[in-house]
Length: 536
Ligand code: NOJ
Ligand code: MG
Image (tube, rainbow, N blue to C red; front, side, top):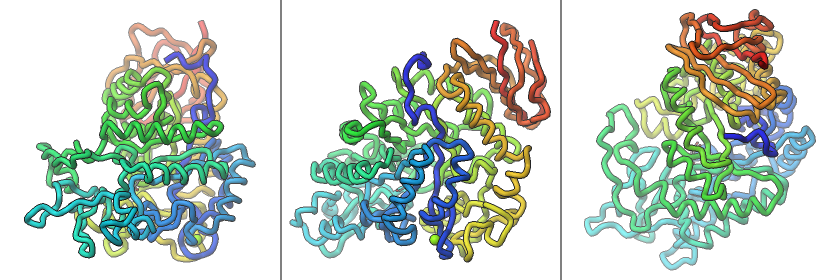
């Protein structure tokens, strides 16, 4: 964990910001966000102190899964604009000293991708083996018991050629066969296409799905399945995901990136800590940042979080760089999970932990999940499994910019509705309010960027009790003590074996900033503070 002496790269020192492009800013009045819209809002992102922007897919797509079903990896969907718009965006991002990360979706294509159209045209088509085709069992049933994440069987019958194909997600998203070297090479070409343009990195979609068991064995039954869960949870995806050979593929992708200067790869991986760590690769030749989704899944409880941070820190391979996430386009928003007051504490946690933070757009103004009436649901996950409350629309609603019609997002009716309170909860209102969550985010990012102890310093847990989460971030020159009250009730920090003295630099109650504290300190409910310790 002695990382402070090394040279650090932009993706280690900086903060990443995720944009869901359909919902950031519409520039052409069709109610859907687009690339020109993002260009128009770069001031907001830059003034927040962001280093890198990750944009969810903007490529040619029939939009069965809102862009995660790609029909041309090197084309821009007209909804979002043109390749000229993309080039303009990339240039504008770079001109501001920021970086641009694209979403790469290598596990599956759209069923309208020319590769799949060829593949399904006949059994002896040269691209047949680019996807996962299998005969029916003798009784006509599916080749094995694998389930689709979006509900139902993962096998779709193709009448024309008389075989099944595998799709981990929608039937409109057939899985590529990554055991085929031609597939590998085709996707590496896609990477090179964007890297040659100057794109700074990729967030790789469902990295742990990319290779499946070569014998396609049945997945075991999950004994802990509960009726309120998605049907996918009925089985343990032991054979359909996280196969050992996936690391060879990740390594090959890494080699492509290493042919360029300071490019990077984030892996989307939902796995337990010890499995997640394997995606750093042996000798760190895998993903630069396997996404760490711990804070999305564990209880909002100080002991639980502290122990998970310790497990994560302890499991990191030598030199493996940590990272933290509070939300994304697939998960309920942090403000909806922990509430408005705790969302401020969560921001302080995200921005003071060791490792690269990724902020989901809108979280910087405390946007909440927006209730979407059943007849307005768009997300296939929600539509396919009605009643399970699995739609991801609520966390994908338009960015709330100001109090004008449609929140300044679009001149027309947005593709997803806005919340009733957007005239109060928006960027413009919060810019004028020094106590807003936006103001807090901005100051936390600035402090993090100004202080090596916070962006590259070491981490050490501090023993605390009850709802209090406490830790140190430090370099040889500077030490910060972070105290986070994860409850609504007041609490007291009076460590037995730790004598501290310092000044509060940022507090969720800004009235306390500048105050000195020593030996013990009381915190209000929902209060978090960063204390600069006096060097002894
Ligand atoms: C993960 C993406 O984040 C999600 O939005 C998408 O539906 C699936 N992968 C399938 O691509
Ligand atoms: Mg538009």
